Length: 166
Length: 419
Image (tube, rainbow over all chains, first blue to last red; front, side, top):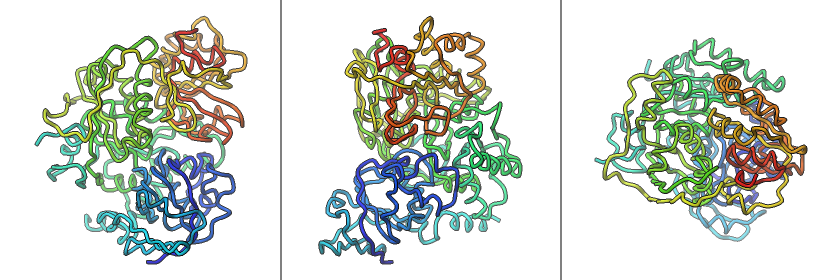
């Protein structure tokens, strides 16, 4: 799958309170959460985002609480992929469970600038920076995560497991 | 093969042989937890999975503690979803209202968690139960929904960082200072994807409550779990809280660690995490002229009876500064009653404190103590992210109950030894 979009660059240790502050956790609706994506980082942040845009972050993106509302808010904002030097553990599981793709690229994240246009090849694990002409290779998505993505997320995966048990 | 604590517990819950860190294993879980924020999403996923019953009605805990007593219509609607699900599934351990407390203080008190258990919770501070020797970790709602349906989940066996403490604790220095100091040293991603395992003479002497305070903040270093051995003290705690059959637990001789740290606590002063990350830690004496508008004593980190006693010892016969709102939130009804019976409330109220109900409340900026722009709070909670307790222009400093109480009296952040 190919995704083409503009980079929105954020810093290190972007926490889940920055991604979706607790006051917005009174809903489970993806679109409503998306309307407040990154509201704890900068009020009105989401207004700059267009469908298929990409967040590029420094290390430990998604640290803090276990709220699944965080990846949902990102998906709800129309962002299908987050690229970062590294991700926080709970956020990592949540993202794949929800169908948000995370690409870990280490220090290569520094080669992707705010406003650059990227073409991300999810199958090849490759990011083409259309603005600079550079290419960044991502760590491969682990097999167990790929299985989840192939199943369409954790919900259909468990559904299948439950059906097998019956 | 020799196993460290994390490997040993995981091995007890899987049929696969654990041979290395990084291995992915499926484990049976002892308890599955969610709260009023995370359960509604978990329920949505659970139904989407086509699940019609929970794997074991006695092994699911639903604790409505974050926005309760319900702060507004939306939060009341969320709790209603959880309540109806609990009834439909005949869940034994459902809590709201008069029997409800902050989940990570409540479940140990009810004897629902103990050594060798695997506990997964849709709350990042689920790692608290590591203080009892449980492999306890936070996950998202959908992972929790899967665990509620199947009674199992997958884990990547984490590499372990072993932390040994030796030396003698100074006055007014305790568990909170130890964990803040460690987070300051290794950073908020210092234990990312890893287990922390604690040991050494200082840990042996630490109370179970203190161990839970430390385990609680493992996640603040990015850790998956913060594990303590289960010793005679642990077993006594578990027995006193109605559990039977628990056995001592320690790492095997020759267990493998990715990293081993040995830290001396002698000479360590009280520690404070400054805005806006829990690893921005400094000794309290380095902080000067930091007036505070609010002091919060409570939460899953420091809302237990020992914490309230520590605060009361400082506050006794003194008054909070006229510019400081002092808020005390005992973490469970049992702790609340105990504090009342011990006369702690008289001390708090004489000091001008508000004593509130058990709730996560202000810790996550929910309610009961939200900060305005430009305000500063000293809190015994666990996170000081920007805007965590209210306005994006407010500041949260994290400390022990003793430092928070002393700062409330002084009107600025202060070492209790200087009162």
